[in-house]
Length: 452
Ligand code: F0G
Image (cartoon, rainbow, N blue to C red; front, side, top):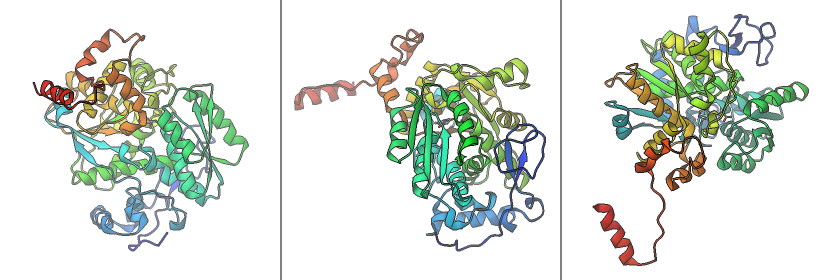
């Protein structure tokens, strides 16, 4: 990759334990003293600013890069490289991730009781989910560190993303996924991109347990979201969002919660933006979980966030079918620091919200739709005011789970489940495919009846 046209000083980064605060730790994923997760800090920022710049000059520099032909500048992650760990340019693996749109959702706004509603669609990344923004940084770091193998346990999107970045970077990849519990599209992606793909007879949490031991025994680099380099890349989505809003912070950012790295990354970005003078106040970050996979909701409601309450997770939103989230402490800190909250939503509420986002011509996968379903509840509770500015983070593309969408529209998504009776209220949103004779009259007749 060519050297960037505009040079900045290097951002020297350090690992710090989120529990005991120790720095100078070995490059692993948990503190060797207290076993907490690690985060990346940039000691030079306080004196010199990132890469030797202040907020005003970085805003200009990042905007100028939008017209550059350099691959790193065309990436919506590496365009912000001053706030990322230093990785030498030839090691950077980019598929031009980031650069995702912010859409208005006027109908969803009305349905939630809001005057206006925005969605940052991270599903518009190269492999169809927000994972690409973190993967480009962590996979590049793996290559720079000399690893030949990378691995992850996944509910489908991390594996699709990791497989793609490994392939682009000439690395081998190993994927562990729960058998029968991820969507076909996600499984097909990791096969297509050449990962060794193992379906374990376990849930996501079981896959994580196996992988954690595998990486202890083999020279394989772990690309799950406990990897702090993933979080750094995912952070750029919040910088990009604020840039798209002309650096005017919204009142609320609403994020789906699974393993809880994305909410942690958004919060870390907002904290840094505030410290560096990009914004004057932080939006409230709220995390929404599925009722059947609600460990953070339970932890906050039942013990005030003292100790994680793991659950046996079950939801049709398979991306967030996670009972023992690794990054719960980081997410908790973000919720507390920004004044956000947690909420949980039912399977039928998720299906309805997903159909409403689809009907706006946007669409998303089920896990992303928890944000709209959660917002409706937060508005009813008065936590979100109708005149406030809310941004939903849509994490995955509609095509990630076409099976869910087809079943929804055919009306059999909830057949034989406990939610069958409640799902009757989804009827007005269902559009089952029609079968007609190949006759002009039949189609014209159909159009006439549709107009009435
Ligand atoms: N939305 C989607 C579409 C996801 O794929 C995930 C997580 C989340 C939300 C939750 O994000 O874990 O950072 O809280 N998917 C992971 C995976 C776990 O393996 O693809 P989180």
